Amino acid sequence: MRSKKELAVRLSMVKGFENPEMREEQYMTPSEIASEILWNACFRGHIERKVIVDLGCGTGILGIGCMLLGAKKVYFVEKDSKALEICRENVKSILGKPESEEYIEGSIEKFNTKVDTALCNPPFGTKKRHADAEFLKKALETAKVSYSFHKSSTIPYLKKIAENNGFSLAEKFDFEFMLWNTMGHHTRKRHYIEVSCLAFCRHSDETTPDERKA
Image 1 (cartoon, rainbow, N blue to C red):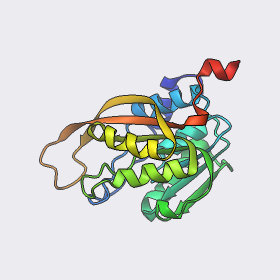
Image 2 (spheres, rainbow, N blue to C red; image 1 turned 90 degrees about the vertical axis):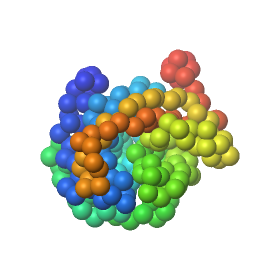
Image 3 (tube, rainbow, N blue to C red; image 1 turned 180 degrees about the horizontal axis):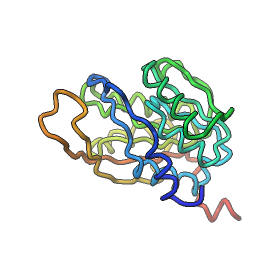
């Protein structure tokens, strides 16, 4: 992958949810935002030749981006069988027939494999309070580094969870998610929410790119 722009173009080909579930807050990560986070994570040494898990992968945009950036292996974990099937189709259409992925249908609680990096864009907790915190806890349990999307207003609460698990906030990326009316309960065609992608690292793994090159 030669550039972040090229990555965004490839990720724009990822097919989204056919019938998004309101109670599961199923929204697809925008391709431009996904490429921004993944390109940075790769620069930090967290993707290429690493074992990755995409928790609550949906139709696979984050995990597919990791595969495009040279991940050693990607676990796609998703309890929605229809979304996981679309994820499989996306991997095949965008990457051909790779052999570096594994699909796990079920809740994130069932995933206990140790990995290098965890990524997730979980439900923001609008329908189920602190739903995103459960994803973060699983990411911190299984990975050395975690990249996860959350409502910006919840950052202090999430930082405490990370600190209690031996992690600290290494980077924060702020975005406005534009959400289209893909669900019947929306009255507006589109609306915006303030979202941050939080990169948490174990205290022992906090190194800068320059330190890794030394």
